[in-house]
Image (tube, rainbow, N blue to C red; front, side, top):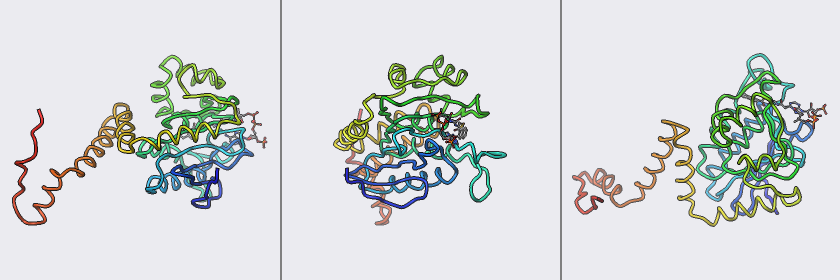
Length: 270
Ligand code: 1HA
């Protein structure tokens, strides 16, 4: 695939090919562990992918074939969070998780090798996950002195069930691709050599579908778990659709033309 770079970063790669944006963590020497900078770059790229009208689907992945992401870089973990070049401790990966759920385009995790700790949660919050046969999944929080009780716990439990989610967090075991597939944690398992090809095939299938329908489905799937914020997202999409109607336009036009609106011809559906 002829991936075209969209923007240069230090710790990630961000590229584009035929409607698809790819965000790839580029720290293979530490199994793609993230620093505050890695996350800030991913947040920036994700926002650019959201704003880019040519992008319909986003792939989240890691370079090197040995890891998707091994979570927060423990070597920069300090007092109060992961400490960036500015010496300020941060947990900004939580913002990235929100962004992945909020972006009104499907985000698909392409997982080879380790998806561990905060890196595991990143694939969990993606819409879909395609795993290579060498993929390994797990949480490490209680082992390394951390926990993600947000989406990392509650949304994981929605996916694999309460018992399994508690097992994953309490025992910190690692699970292979087959086990992940069995518990509904991933959508498909393929040989490593076919990982990108299969992911691209899934992306193309989604790109051929109605973008508004996919958008409505994503906000609908999110709505219940996200509570008031989820309803806001779904309602925002309803407003978007309403703005496309002549009925809504009559309201705006009447205001601009300084006259009373005439909604009489619009149907009062049963
Ligand atoms: O929990 C949170 C958060 C919660 C709330 C809010 C925000 C959060 C943000 C983040 C996180 C977390 O991510 S906590 C969990 C952090 N991650 C981990 O505990 C995983 C650490 N890594 C491992 O357990 C293992 O590396 C591994 C099971 C993934 C792979 O083992 P393997 O194949 O034996 O490789 P290993 O030799 O351990 O790793 C290769 C190199 O990568 C090593 O460096 P080297 O000795 O060659 O110099 C290793 O130190 C480095 N590395 C791997 N993972 C990390 C890492 N370096 C820093 N941070 C890492 N996470």
